Length: 232
Image (cartoon, rainbow, N blue to C red; front, side):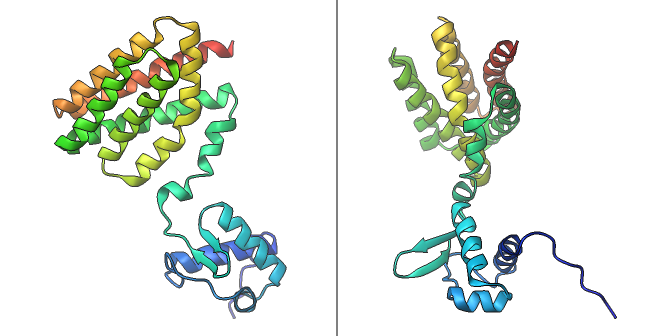
């Protein structure tokens, strides 16, 4: 006789795993309303309080959505929503952790920029050019950072991979704060950033994936090296 392997973790953790399994197997689909708390708890063989905690946890993670007076629904499971908590890592990491995140961002953003160079259309390229122009026309740090973030966001979206774009977006906020701090200490930082962005744009315009990859990697590497220098 086959003996079932005990499921590890708390009752709430097991409930979370069971609900995720139901979604993965298609028993619950994006946008679908969950059974009532009572029915779902009975179906999974757990108490209602544990079920309530599981639903709350999955709501925080962007998997479920509670609608007042309507019930609990599976979200559309968009990558951006599911990765929302991932951005918290970038927000609270100390400098050493932030350097590691920048390494990840350098790898991902260079790949996304290379892919964008192969896929970007005329309208998308024009949008990138507009953000580049905004960076070149302002001397205000906050305006520059806003245009900078929009520039990279437009490129990531042009790569045609929503998950990749969402990950890069979640890795960006703290990175750009670090760049602002660097700008306060280095008078040439914005000039260097403008040059970097122009090089990236030229590679996109030429539809040259390898040049785009190299330019994007070098751009992030400059910030990464500055942060490393601050650790000592």
